Length: 380
Image (tube, rainbow, N blue to C red; front, side, top):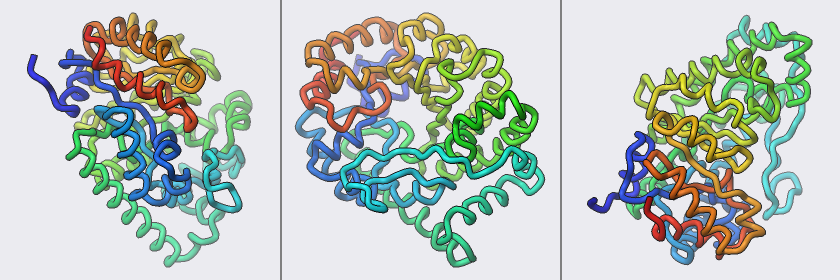
């Protein structure tokens, strides 16, 4: 078999083919910034410094085929797109090398679910953003926010182009969207309150998720246009079996996952389903998604070998070197786990080796090297 480019390996694996070797595409922006000698603040707010840190990391530890989600340069955007902004390093007294953190705080009441549909989701969400971001109030505030989004997306796009020239592909870049339940439980109603709503206000909650669906699809499409990258990162971890029963999943999450995937795929846009927590009891549901178009991206909490049993030949599987192994294990242990993934999950193609969610900022460099190098050591 002729040697493939990184992009060809990734495309082949997504389409359930068997590339010349298994591609490796971790989430490593937090780790690369620490290893490359910059702070987490620098990574989020200075993409030039983030690129230099990533280059040092890859030069020292080995080049990857691609990068999964990448937060580099997204700091200003993350502060704008959530009614409750995440805690970011270097902002509001937070140490510059701290880890960022989403904030659980309700900014809406159950009776507002109906208002999302009545007012229209775009107008309603803009009002909610203005309510919680004084700097967005008024026409000048929104114009400034739009300018930030456009400017920073263009910087990220130029960065991705440079890395592609170096042979490093991007699976999703900054193209982040959520299923409606994720958006509500993460950015509007907080997780505990959302769970209560499933029992106390189920019909109201479904009104809200239905109204938000098309807005979240539009946001995904906007990111695709701005980045030029025709894949989206679809986060759904709060719909996992760690939190929901099968009945709740079928009622509050599965229809939206199906509709969003169908919409993007019908327009030639691939979907990376980022699924933290335990999804093993729900694997069979994903057989309803279009074959060879989606990526099942697991984080180390699910049984990835069970995923291969259920979904091999239907969906590309991606993962799943656990964070604790990268931080606390030894290189030989990492190599052995990667060997098993490559030889078993990747036996017939349709597999991308990756970290289980993100590589920890304080992972052992020798363990990260072992993960990256494993794809060259083992061929299924």
